[in-house]
Length: 120
Length: 110
Image (cartoon, rainbow over all chains, first blue to last red; front, top):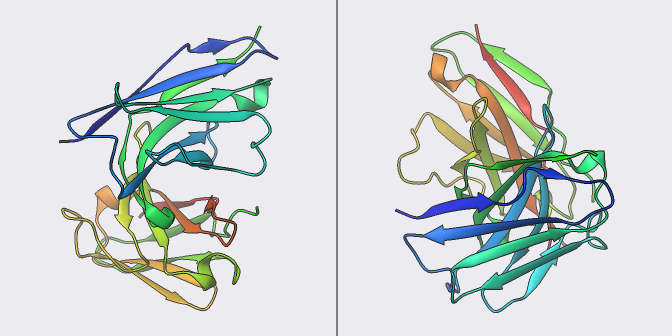
């Protein structure tokens, strides 16, 4: 059974860089059939796609976040990483990683999510 | 990119059927058969209920079905049950090779 687990600091200072890692177990991240994506959800609000990456390193980003986001992949560790620069309180959210079908046709496996709070 | 449009809330009684709409444009919902739907219970991660507009993942009840007409996709839940009460989100591939979600719909089972 595939499992995804997000990890990283739960508190980030304003203007700093948010860094999260998604560790995939029970399957290989080096599949040509899927992307690996990050989705966030501010408290009490809806889902927002941040970006996705293919195992070759090709990336797709939400245009509204593109200037601040970097997603990378480490196939040797079966991990996907997210970096979001210059954070503000508006970036406070639960951050999920997910396995995404090609063409963004759906996301069938999700991590449990990790709450990141931006505050001094 | 603009979020897809969903009703904020819908409700129904046990045993009834409800439909949640998801309206986009010809650049997303209307242009591709890559619409998916998610169920999210409070404090839980989203769960994939429908992908490729009409397909159900293994393990999802056949009470859930998806369809699309023009720029609007729909999720229908038949034989409504108490455990169906949750938030529901649609999403779609876009012509810019991005992924966009709807604002979410809160389903209340009366």
